[in-house]
Image (cartoon, rainbow, N blue to C red; front, side, top):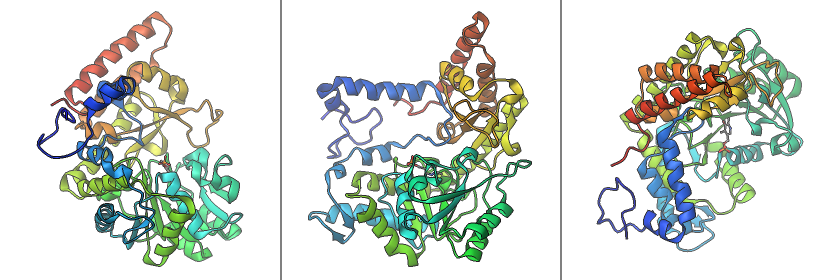
Length: 436
Ligand SMILES: *Cc1c(COP(=O)(O)O)cnc(C)c1O
């Protein structure tokens, strides 16, 4: 076999794959795509708040023969033979996850964050029941009641908002809506909310109306793992999450739950909403949990927050406005109205300089959803590359130059080319997936 990667330790290990030489030989077209994506990651700045750069160990588990195994069911209770080996991956993963989060029960099988949420809904509610969650326009997720998603089609979704003045969750309104609508489930957690969430307050409200409290920690579970922010686990009936955002594991989902809900959650994942688990991904989740339990990961999680704060500060210094005045987490929501640029324009201009980010609505956005007034920026990927606050200050200044450069004018295009060059120089100092 040819070397499975440039930096693979121990060529004598009898590991079958990932063999990039085989891919190149059999399918040069897709091998080219894989290499192009690696080059894209290496050549630019990834500021998408929901992305990260997984370790070679996680990638190796993902590219393993565990992908072949059918293992419907749970360890020791499978519907297929030959599961003794993959059972160990799930058992080890479950034990590590429980220890890392102090959780009573864990399910690592959800294929994604959305699948984890579907299962949590199914465990606690029936179609037509009421669910109270954050307004999508203000940072809630598709699975929190969107009309094009199961959550909005099959459930009666009521939305709470942030306060217009502080741009923080309006807990009084959450309580009022809970008392009025008597939801089966209250969901705390969002996809574009830069601040800490008061889980104790949500617990109080849920208890007052007899609702289950589901914390959708998809975005910030990695910061909890790294002990950089408070954990929702002691307060929630169930915590759903992804494993690929700040947590830096494989793309996938997971559920943490109180023991009393263990059966309902497991049944809601399999057989209700999924078939066979992705055992290669479960194994890779186990690897990520081991990594996240290290002191180095805790330092990483704290640096992620310091970097997001430095980035938000730098962008404010360039005349933009950080929603809620800043961030306590890995992401910032930036209002571009003060500099007269739309989120879409900013995203497109940054793209030309290989700064990757996404346009995003801001709370009470006066612009239509397809032309939002802001961008969302995050620090998980750049921090994995080893960048620190001073790099973030430089990124803020490059980002601002890109956003303010009028694409299509001679001066604007020259400025974008200059910024692209500076981005290239910056990432070559702290590259993603460094060579050898
Ligand atoms: C990312 C995210 C999800 C969904 O994760 P997928 O793996 O993309 O399905 C769910 N909830 C929130 C709050 C998220 O940010």
